[in-house]
Image (cartoon, rainbow, N blue to C red; front, side):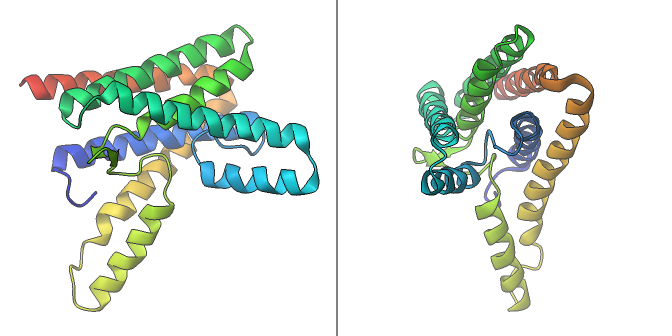
Length: 212
């Protein structure tokens, strides 16, 4: 995050907000299952296996698999690590979210959830670095670890402001989650349409900035 250009930091912040928004919709609709936070889902999967809750475990296994599939597809769509690659990933994410919104509108909620999960997996390919995730956008565990380490560095006489980038990213996801919860209370999964539109807008902005 700290190594990004200012414009890319803003993009990362906004996309973290989008991830929080979509994850909040999924969490509320599914009653406590995430569409982007796979560490939490992995723990729930293991607990359900241990307790013999096979249908719940199978459901979570499907979500984990779809997230990996979305990450796989996002990396293939990116095809590189430049601005054009980022735009392609965001276009793909917008398409998945729009399809999810359409599926929810037709009453195909399992398909809608699956597409949401894939969209969140794909988003992590926006900032690739050497073929791997450069900035965590849909999960904040690593970001919070870096926040704590940056604070420790400041106490030891290092960069006093290094923590701000990580705190801001976490705040972006949290704000998006609050916004998602509020929107869900009025629109249900139809709240996916604004998410799809936002992802498309970000894709266009990234593409236009590259052309400028």
